[in-house]
Image (tube, rainbow, N blue to C red; front, side, top):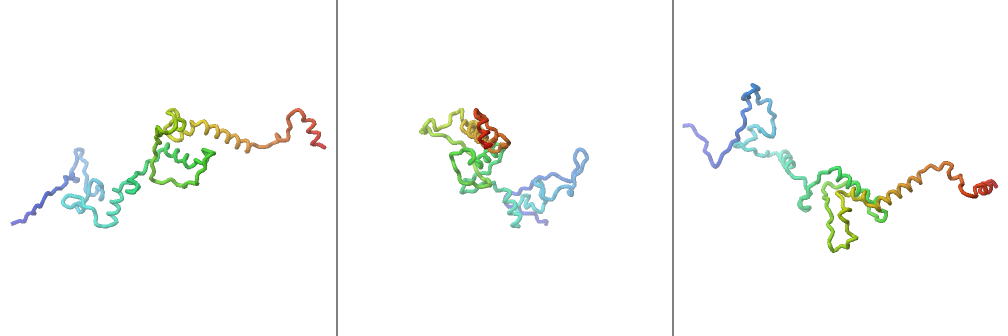
Length: 194
C-alpha cells in the first residue's frame, strides 16, 4: 500500500510558469537561461512547501534585513526620514552655511562643515500676539529662503555697498593718485618741487 503524505493544516504551492515550455512565437526558455537568485523565481531548494524561507546564515539574513529597514533617524527622533535633496534645498543649505556673510549685525558660531543626513525644513507661523511690524507680510513671503533673501531691500543695499568697497580696494592705483585736481594745482605742483 503506497503511503500518502498526511496533510496538516493548509498547504500552498505557487503556480510558477513552466519555463521549459515554448511560447507562441516558438521561442523556448530553458532552466539555464533563468538566473539563480531572481526576485521573481526562486529555485526549489529555497522553497519550503512552496513558501520562501529566509536563510539561516547570519550574513545573508543581515543583508536581507538591511534592505528592508527604512532610512530613518530612529525611534528617538520619531523615525524622521532622510529628505531627498533637490536643487532648491541645496541652495537653501548653502545659504545657511554662508549666513555669516548675509547679515553684518549678527555673528554666528562656526557651523559644521558637512550637513547631517536627517533634517527637516519647515515654515514659521507667526503668532497673532506678535507685533505687526515683526511679522512678514504676504508680499514678503517667498517659496524658498534664497528668494526671500534676494527680495530683501536692506540686504540688497548691503551687498551692493560691500561689492563697491571690494572693487575700490582692488582697483589698480595707476597714476591717478598723483594727479591733483582742483583750483590750486599749479600752486601744489610748485610746493612739491621745492
